[in-house]
Amino acid sequence: MPSHQSPFVKSSDDTPDVEPADLVLEERKQAAVYCLKQVNEPTLRSNIVELGMVRNLRVVDSYVYLRLYVGVHQLSLKEQVQTALGALKWCKKAYVEICTIPGVRTTLAISSGKGGVGKSTTAVNLAAALKRTGASVGLLDADIYGPNVPQMLGLAHSAVEVIETDAGERFQPLEAHGIKVMSVGLLAAPEHPLAWRGPVLHKIITQFIQEVAWGELDYLLIDLPPGTGDAQITIIQESPICGVVMVTTPQQVAVSDVRRSIHMFRQVGVPVLGLVENMSYLICECCGNRTSIFGSGGGEQMAQELAVPLLGEVPIDSKICHGSDTGQPLPLRDETAQLSIVFEAIAQGLNNTFCSNPRLVSQSL
Ligand code: ADP
Image 1 (spheres, rainbow, N blue to C red):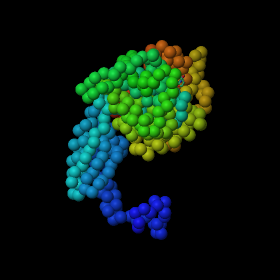
Image 2 (image 1 turned 180 degrees about the vertical axis):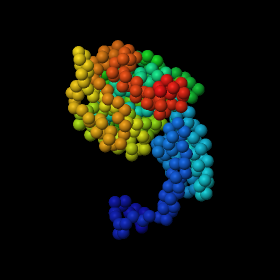
Image 3 (image 1 turned 90 degrees about the vertical axis):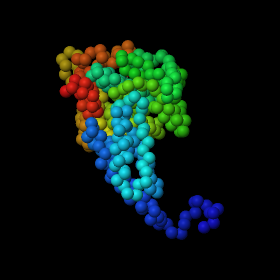
Image 4 (image 1 turned 60 degrees about the horizontal axis):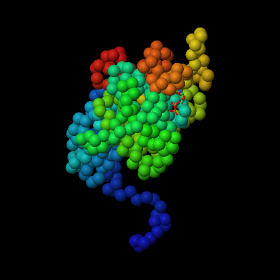
């Protein structure tokens, strides 16, 4: 074939040639996946492949390359991975790159199919509920389309400082009610949209995830942008997210968008922990009766269809807005409010699943 042949000219034989070498590599990759599935994470009682911790797996000749996305308490899994892959006779060396957020144990994402369903409200109230269980919590507002977490926590006009650490320059997170907070909104001029695109967006998000001095955290909650675009995928791929909490409302439109988002998470291998149905019902202040003003059963139906648990049904509560203005989330102001009770139950469920810290688990039993 002449070397200047157009890449658009079809070859006479349309059937793609599969080189025997490719087949060998594919078989080796499958064998590597089999070995990796033998490595279990003890607290989560599942293997590291199912948990979405193994990514970018490649086999080149007799070498295996992979990234292992873990919390700071799971670094010893690297050695177990090396041992498991050592069982492959053809494998001369396995290169395992650890990807973690310094100081952070469990990273969870809060997501939604579309905007306005209460994703940030859920992130803020869940962070507060986790804080109430005694956990150390950080909240990363990565919603580039509507970063309103600082406002909800009363930090809207705060300036972010850059500090010098042993690892280089880092953003110093702000703190509200004992929750550490960082937001893309704090990096832009107020009232200006964040018009980042393509490689710039990718670079900024990656830096943003890696370059915050969180200190020691039990949980880092990431408030994702809504939907399934570039920004979401970059954040998911670049961070050690252990699971996603999907927020929806009972309305059908939100419900069909959430279906798309859940498929996206499954495609990239990140476990979906469950659904939160926000604005499920209104409680009458006089008689305590519940009214499902946006219809009922959407979350339940979606949870069944997609085989994910329904983590909670959050009522509409006008006090949430007062809290948003003063910056104090409802679970920290009124633990008896139905909304606080729902978030406390979700927080306890997360502690029971993710926390090997007996202090938090025993409190939540
Ligand atoms: P998203 O992050 O999905 O765009 P927000 O969390 O910003 O949505 O919520 C949108 C608006 O709805 C906010 O004004 C918020 O205070 C209000 N809101 C959200 N959930 C509730 C709720 N359960 N009860 C009352 N108001 C709510």
